[in-house]
Length: 71
Image 1: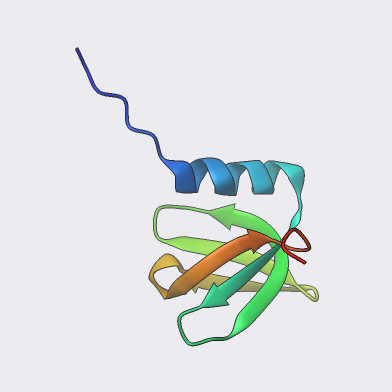
Image 2 (image 1 turned 30 degrees about the horizontal axis):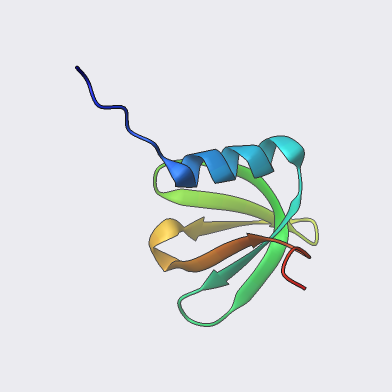
C-alpha cells in the first residue's frame, strides 16, 4: 500500500493562484509584501505588486495569508 503525500503549501498556493486573490507575504526580515501570486514552483514565488513582478525565494518567507482575511 502506497502512502499519499499531502502538500498543504502547494494546495494553498494553487488555490490562490487560480482565484487571483490578493496575498500578503511576510519575509523573515520583517518586510511585508502584498500582491497577486503570478507563479510558483518548488523554490520560489512570483508576486505582482504595483505593476512589478517580485521573485521571492520560499526560504525567505515567514508567513503567507490571503489579504484581508485576518483583519
